[in-house]
Length: 156
Image 1 (cartoon, rainbow, N blue to C red):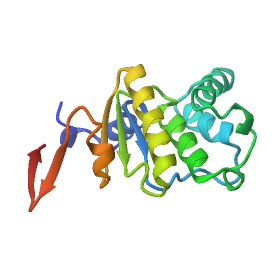
Image 2 (image 1 turned 90 degrees about the vertical axis):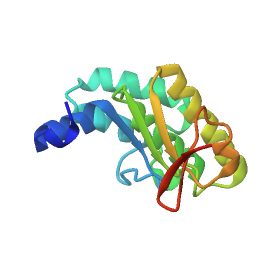
Image 3 (image 1 turned 120 degrees about the horizontal axis):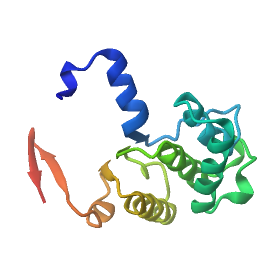
């Protein structure tokens, strides 16, 4: 069914259940810990608190941040914040991951590390990832590259 024909409630449900979002700036909730930032979207989706905590712990572990789970965003580095944002985007097992410049605010080394984690998690979960980037090094590592040039969408 075309997305334009969905009601607002149906579009909200699609965003909540089928899409995961990662932004250039992490947009973590400052008053919550890293773990809680991953749990919250699951609670909103109706997942029980115990299952949400288990899933969040698995994702934190996959990101290599077990020791940072109880820290608030202000106590995390930029790369750690972005890895938590990726884990949050994957928490509800979306079908599609949308990432807008997910490494844009990171130094090259951290950007590479975060990109590798993002791609390994997306591939491991078998989901489609649509990633917008201005970084040609990262773009070259994608399975498929489309670019917008003078208003025309071109394939690599």
